[in-house]
Amino acid sequence: MKILTKNKITTLKKPDYYLKYFLSDYAKPLIVTFSPANILIDNKEADQQQSPWGFEFLLNENVNVLSFSCINKKNWYRSKELFSFLHKISIELDSFKIKLGYGSSMGGYAVGAFADLLNLDRVLLINPISTLNKELVPFETRFSKYANILDWNSDFKDGTIMNSSGYIVYDPIYTLDAQHAKRYCKNLVPLKAFGLGHNMPEHLKNLKILKWLVREFIYDTLDIDLFYKKIRTRRTLRRYYTWMLSDENVHLTDLRSYIIKNYAKKNGFTIKQAKKIEFDYNDFELIKKVAVLCENIHPNYSLELMKLLKKFRPEAPYVNKKILFYEQTIKKDKK
Image (tube, rainbow, N blue to C red; front, top):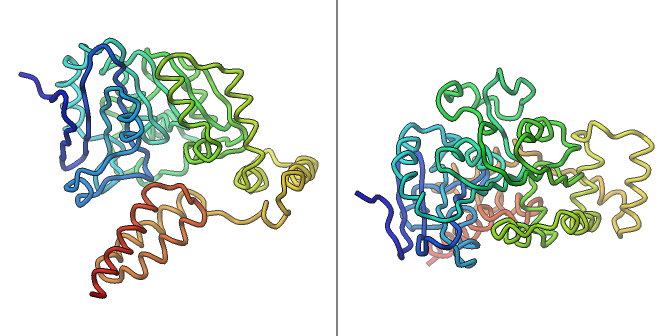
């Protein structure tokens, strides 16, 4: 008995995960995506059949797409119910001629972890977290909460154990991400984006590289030399200088700082702008969580908090979606 429906946009809501998919043509590529931690679907959004990370773009590319998201909380796709579901659909997915995986950060872990189960031919991973198993990644300090409360010793605990080929995009200067990336280098071609830190998809999007990169990956036509030519435009981003001059850049010396500041000036940024403080991942997530907790009591406060986050990450889809939601809620309340 088949589980997946064809030729119809379909959603599936479960306690631990949410899926939206469209399958139409076995001859076209199938892309499986897993959302990163900063773009989750909540119950209300699932009921409204909203789209997980990557779904709309891939749907417009006229390919088959399966897009997963954690629902309400970051369970890092460690749900046994999800494991069981993926086992069940893996046989159906074998009907597709080409099967690909695409994910970032937490989603990058999931793509790697389930790549062999789903028989993915190629993967595109952007700054993936390989695992939170403390024995495998003792260097990882950013997600200690999830390392402690989730089971990282059972099935699919390591995103690097896969046979798929493909690419991994990461910042080699950002030590934590670079250490995860090294664990993948056996199978994947590294694409190094110096000085962009962990929030890589947003910066690739701002540089107008992300769509190009995903398309080239889908059709297996990626020109690596052209990627490095395109990525040099990062010098037009204030975020590039902010990160390079931050404490997170453990390679920063006085001489390097002097050179970076000179490049910043040449590209129209003052030193004050280049050194402007930005939230790190944990700060951003904490403020976002407080905003959501307040939304049913003080939507005005939630709106202001989300607008604050937008100043630091103007392209963040979840933040923009919540701002629109709060504005509509406040407008209704005034009537």
